[in-house]
Length: 137
Image (cartoon, one colour):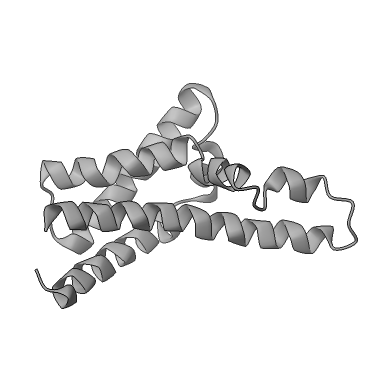
């Protein structure tokens, strides 16, 4: 596969990601998918099923190996909030730090932390999608 073809398929996967992770994910799923117990498990599972369907639809494939390679890493990232884990690991911006801040710009810190978290989470997902395409082609 040429670089151009790979870029084309990655762009389609990215569009699937944006559709599945943002356009088709209600606020309740986003807030509850990392909760402990059965409730969080099911919210995460349903969200990742919808997400996987969006990505596979954009890639025009429903091969079981593709479904699993898209589904499993996304479920792990979302269920265990690996973006938060990563930000704590590198001592980056965290919600705990923003909420407990006494700085006069606390509100800005909370908003900016939300952006950093969203970009970190999306980057983890896109790296996984890149890996899927790399493995399959």
